[in-house]
Length: 146
Image 1 (cartoon, helix red, strand yellow):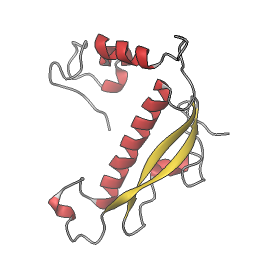
Image 2 (cartoon, rainbow, N blue to C red):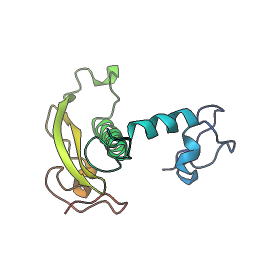
Image 3 (cartoon, one colour):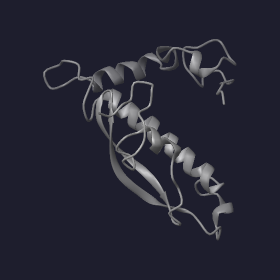
Image 4 (cartoon, rainbow, N blue to C red):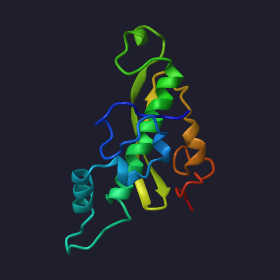
């Protein structure tokens, strides 16, 4: 599935509307203020750039993307979104999260994996990330565990 954006101002700095978001360079999706904030967050106490390890900006971005993907998988598994009335008395619902650490190209990244009450949710992503249920192969996009 391809994601496109149509609304002006939704993604700052990109004039081409209707373009596949995956084809747009990341720097064009982030406005200057956000890029400056990310740069500032990347600095260590000595003023150098900290680009790897727990708490690094790349690690935080990997965490945000993985957790978003896991939430989307749980929504697809349950058949309804968070706070959707369709989930009331459905027989299965969200049931908190489990802390896991995955090994990535930027170092270990702690993430929270959502659970369902029935215990039937098995994320497809789990098979791609060592440390997430302890099984599977690595993502081929630079996230790996060894």
